[in-house]
Image (tube, rainbow, N blue to C red; front, side, top):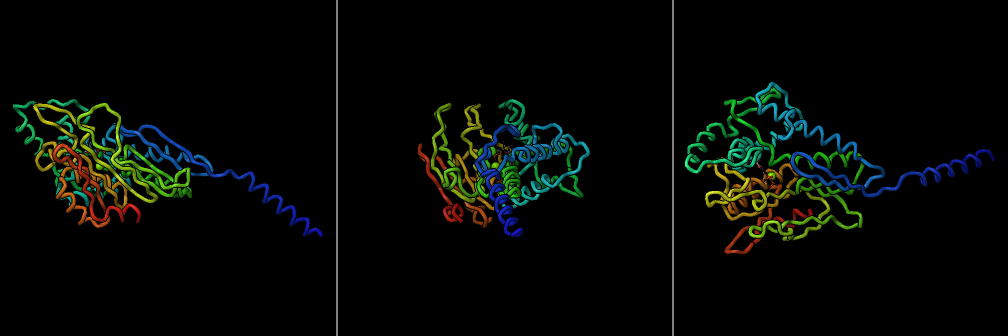
Length: 334
Ligand code: ADP
Ligand code: MG
């Protein structure tokens, strides 16, 4: 009798507990980080906002060029500092993509990025001095001029600077995705400045919809159009484009992708490169590498990488042409 009563009591407690347990719902967290925006959507029983903020802050303290107290800023200022796990993961990937791209992707490109006006300073290249100035800066550009030894960056030349701008957004996406996964989230979309990690389904129970922007060279300020909308449930993807961050000077169009091998902003027909890879950090670095390499060499690099696929938008006789690597569709749905 007593045990039956206990059983009923226990069942009632369980039902009461279930009713009071919060139901999962979709949360949205948005803000600014290292000079760009973030938009994070996820399904959870309660907000994970605090963990996300803490992770973004830790990441900013390691790799942000906009944070004067970050490890990266200390390395650039030749202050004594010790690298952390995020910095070392960035370094490992930067090394890999430097090799894979035959030096087209190079995180020591920073001083040239600044010279051409895409860093913190405004563009001032003097057309008469340009060649000489570029050559003198190139003396301290080159990933082979730096090494990571016992958690310290060792420079051959103290003028060498590091620029993680082409990897950090993707890496931060991976890191936030890991925070969400650790908290048991199955359904999330992390978007940091256009780099994306998507997993599971959206709040309508559908795959996440991710747009690839149509490059628009002639119509500044016009509303952005989409080239394509992808439906994805498990993807790490990054886009690099030369159609947003550029200016005209001396009759040239200068974009923020610099070819470290020449010292000049790249001038070819690839307007945007979207890459999917096994991590968003890798996709981010490789998308920038594709922009530097141009269509043919980019396809070659993607083939050699094995875990990546790409979608290039190329200008051809006043129209836009899409060139996809043969494994593109397969990698999107894998
Ligand atoms: P976006 O997503 O804004 O197109 P990217 O991921 O292509 O950006 O990164 C562009 C940034 O990468 C530049 O602003 C510069 O800081 C850096 N960068 C430019 N050229 C190179 C290069 N050849 N290798 C590595 N980083 C580069
Ligand atoms: Mg990039």
